[in-house]
Image 1 (cartoon, rainbow, N blue to C red):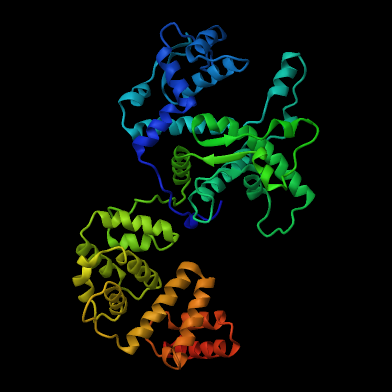
Image 2 (image 1 turned 30 degrees about the horizontal axis):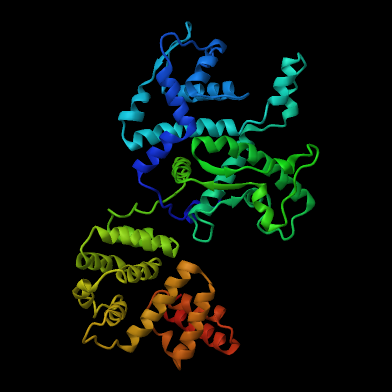
Length: 475
């Protein structure tokens, strides 16, 4: 999983909607049904599981059938115990009663319901990290010896592997470059945690590891779907017909769905974000900044992708009058620190969403050295009359500020390269003048222009100007 500072904000559904999804998830719904069914006559063993004699009644209560019915009933009971829906009242006698948390599912807040669901999710994730023990169980049933070392199972490594996969699925879901709500092919998800990012053509050994990971994930996502974390289309059973041959990663894109497809549900997005927050990551959600000041909005959205910053800003503006919002944004955009240019860019983007009612706030800052340029741009774009022409120094200052903001937001992007070429082309003698501009980022911007401009002569002029600017600033 990438560095926490790079996590884009998640767009979460309302908690009431998520709570309804949680209540309808089969794992929690079954656990709640068994908790309501349990009474003084219900008996459990020393581990808190239902005694064997109780399982047929539990299966009937849940309306289950088939070979796995008892196993599903047993799992539902364990989830009921783990989540506090059932309480063991006497361990020696093995008696139970409804737990305090059972009432939360009907009488609690959406947050209460989601809290119970998160506990159920942790229990299911723990199960998903345990290897298939069927062969061992068969051996024990036949009286054979069981060699635990043959499992080659490292619980911490298995849990870390699953966390890594789910972390990447989260990033793909919230990132603007990813598929969003579209399902992700299982081979691609497995490869994301197996194949090194700097590897060109994967070796046969790496492809075999991806294939093994796919099979583990196929089992794990089958377990995670009933808790409501994911929607999962399993690997086609026909691909596994030969037990001695693991399926290879597909090469035909038309067949990719046969190798498994997984999508994080809205409830799953909520759940994984909660786990990331618990693990110490900064995992923002759109709307977090709606009730904060403009300074928090501009700083908070600085690293956001464009669409997420737009959505967050719209929510922030919705709670304020256009004139008050504009004044607050402009005040927060001032500053000479390294983050100030990007704050002003976010301010400019936010002001583009504000109507003509904000005009007085923009006129108030026309003479401000830091804000006068962007104020003129806004007034002109909104058709305001009598907008004074900017002094040349203000034009160049705004140019430096804009490039510095783009550098902070995108680095050496193609868009920035095009901007740099356009600036050098439009202004004759640009570099002779711009190095004198008293902006903290002038040397850095000119150095970037020297790096990015494809014309060697122009690039050399930019580097010379950067040297002069740095000397002028005493650096």
